[in-house]
Image (cartoon, rainbow, N blue to C red; front, side, top):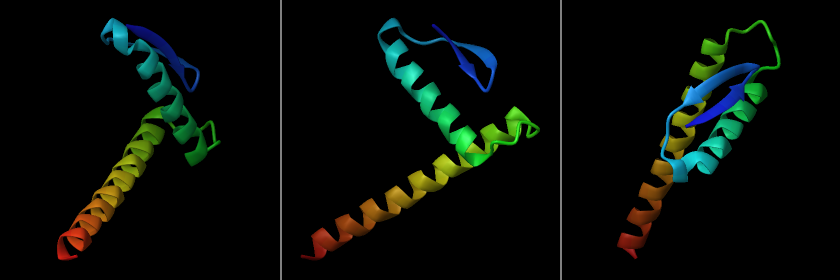
Length: 77
């Protein structure tokens, strides 16, 4: 279990003992992404989380497309 601060709010997140360090890392990346989306403190945290999630989903989609294209190119060779 970790207790991390995201945008000045503490959140307790359950995880396996051996995953705590990785979860801290992910929380830090998420907070950095949220801060990069907006430095406006008046935007609700929920909205920033939603925008961060959509941004991550877009990156994952683009990565999947690139991998698929690369696999198709290799199969054609």
